[in-house]
Length: 390
Image (cartoon, rainbow, N blue to C red):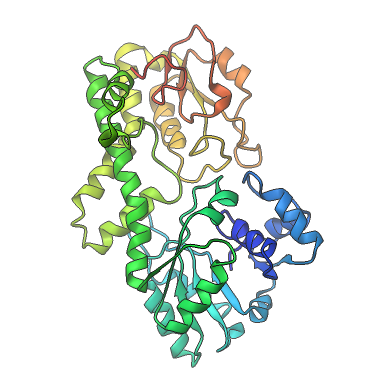
């Protein structure tokens, strides 16, 4: 269910390639048509050749017909808990989404929740099924794959498996053992928190690096030189990341889910959010101190939320662009991966390099490495190797 996206489709074709006959059900007719042509609807290295192989051998197909759910022994739901504009998670979103398919559920199935859920949603889904008189077993088996590494990490990372029943754990373990040998057993509530803790821990680490960067940069010091020095042959600091935009569809959202779960007493998570979400504003403010922005055109290099990606979901590049539209004369952007049908305002790199007075490296795409220009560059990622002082 929802299987035509970044989480569901790589899992579906990986399972099909390992011998499980698989069908993707998705509401998007465009996505399903693209998939059935043997084309990935998004960038995922190594996935398209697998997709074409499992389509050709009949182990995989895709449909917009909800009735296909009733043909499955295992139903993997890749719908996650959303967070609204007030940063409140909606625990009822997944049960509500399942309603449309509930006529096709039956007692012999195992329903596996795969995406991030608010703590307690697994129990909510179990209750919904029982209220409908169904004995369908439920498991929560969180996806912990880094985007663009699915076709590697699906087979190398341990898989957390949880279910209220021994039978549910065994059935889910059997399915995922076709992909990986390492299974980690947890209770559903433990697994729900494990997924949220995983993403929030990364978010907090990025916030620490970004806060350190702003401290150093505000005093005219090169944070990258400091980081290189303190991490050199010093194992207790090796996990200190470099600064940069911490964005995407998971990290911010999951930190806010934990905040809601803790009755908004998660001060560390809120602080991380303020730091990470504040980095674009900090960059613009620092540029205003050095340049007459209101009379200059700023070029943003990279609009996707991470390097090598075409995914713009929750990308801070767009927050940066909104701020600059208010404070600069003009703002233009470019990205070698984001297609025109997603953002038709983007220009080729050469055009941005020609028209912009100031450049900002917002996404560290490899295509920008070695870039030479005589224009000022705000390079928080230190992609160009000239330090990260703005």
